[in-house]
Image (cartoon, rainbow, N blue to C red):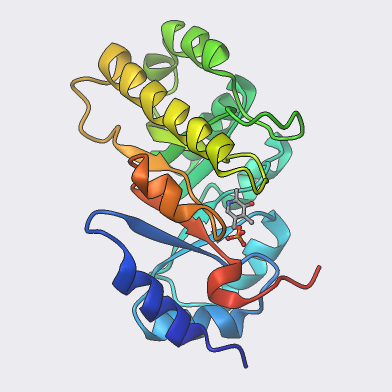
Length: 223
Ligand SMILES: *Cc1c(COP(=O)(O)O)cnc(C)c1O
């Protein structure tokens, strides 16, 4: 078996205080999650509703599940009862549906707005301009069962470190702007989720406080 425990311990050891680790367990079996759980890891990231539902059934109930993949509105109802955080919110339609489903379960769910800063067109998320429009339109007040806790972003998938560097810097500056303009009095708006296996040290340099790491902990995914 892949040495999950060693990898988790090593990574946690290297992280500055205040940086939280989302162990991205998508496409990996429940046994890998149990290994990580055994050394104290509690936050896991999944990107497919069906796979998440199967894992939730067999794994400990104190795991905090983060949804990190593209979420279709018609699937929100399946995860609304238990999801801890939805990091990949990329449309107002999705916010409205999360609000509706969470209202049914009488809960407020934490979300991150996905920011598109990467050069790559394939990445999803709001552009900075779209996010400004959305926030100025009063989403905060409109959807009381959704709590916007910060931003999530992915840098371009490239060897060009200076490009990744500038994308994370853009995300960091935009976070500060949004915080000042819309969430200055809200302590909960504090999550900067950027950094994956290949770029998390750079992300931390640009004020990330939540990294989403899969491959480095669990090995290559088998699709
Ligand atoms: C898969 C995934 C990750 C983890 O990627 P690794 O390179 O395996 O660390 C992080 N964030 C998101 C949104 C992902 O889909």
